[in-house]
Amino acid sequence: MNEENTPFIRVGLGNLNVVKGEQRLIAMAIGSSIGIILFDPVHKVGGLACVLLPRAGDSTVQHRLAGFADSAVDNMISQFRIMGASVENVQAKLVGGGCIFRDMESTFMGDMIEQNVIMIKKVLQERNIPIVAEDTGGNFGRNVTFYVGSGKVIVITINSRQEL
Amino acid sequence: MTENVGLTGLELDTLKEICSVSVCQAATALSQMISKKISISMPQVRVLPLSEIHQFVGQPEKVIAGIYLEVEEEIFAGLLMSFSQNDALLLNDLLIEFPQGSTKRLDDIAQFTLKETGSILACSCLNALSSFMGGKTLVPSVPYYALDMQGAMLDYPIMRFSRDTTSALIAKIDFSEEIAQLKGAFYMLISATSLSTLLGVNRVYT
Image (cartoon, rainbow over all chains, first blue to last red; front, top):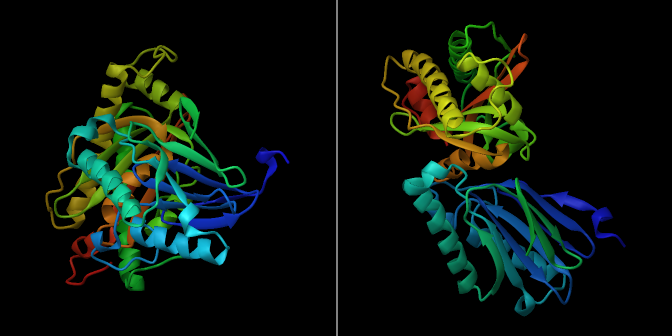
């Protein structure tokens, strides 16, 4: 089956999706937010979450959206279990955390984005999920397509295209 | 889904009116700068959960030349002026009164011109907004320029706002100039926590 013709689900900012088998998960225009991709290559289960901040405790209010790395990862892992994937096989890929406005890099915002990426890595480390690939930082937005059937991740920016 | 964060109907209407007038002022400023007549769309003002802002704006993957400014004192807001790449080149011609098609690429000088334009548009918008708030001083940040996906630029204010709130007010206006066929848009995002300051009431909206 041609991978380009598989059904796809769009994952919006502050949302997550977990699917099994030949499907695609697509996240459009990831800027300073971060796309966390979890994949179990044995059971072909994959999940994608677009998170804003590393921990739910970083916000002073209760959010309904899956905008936090720790709660989003836990949520995805529990869905992985339901779909029959084993947690030991899960690998993570990180995409995003770009500082779109070049001049902003030297300001407080640039540091905040950098810190977010570091903290999210820590969140994954705490849960013993290895990060096998990442494409973070830079000055551009990214479109991400995750082929759950093969585990392939294609990252497209306005002037490049690469596979993770 | 609309979420009105505990605003009454009257308060929501007031906010819509205030924000519509403010974003219209941005279009007026542009019209004065290029001394041409600008047609505007009906301003759209909504209070939305942060995760729905991308949907409201539409086409997050669309590549635009964007100028972004932030306000951090008194209220927490983000302002974005957005033009497609071709429109940005055209705007540059109009601003420096060159024949159409003279600007070939968005080099440093063109970027600087756009930044200043964005700054002026944002300031006129904030001026109008401040007059509704009893003349409070709203100081915008320096303008930031990027040529990238629209949705990626909006990630900034959404990320900042997500620390204290789940919703935000977004005001949008589209403008166009008939003769040169210039099209653009202006967005204003205000954190829900700042809405009480805008309305001058002693309540907390999240």
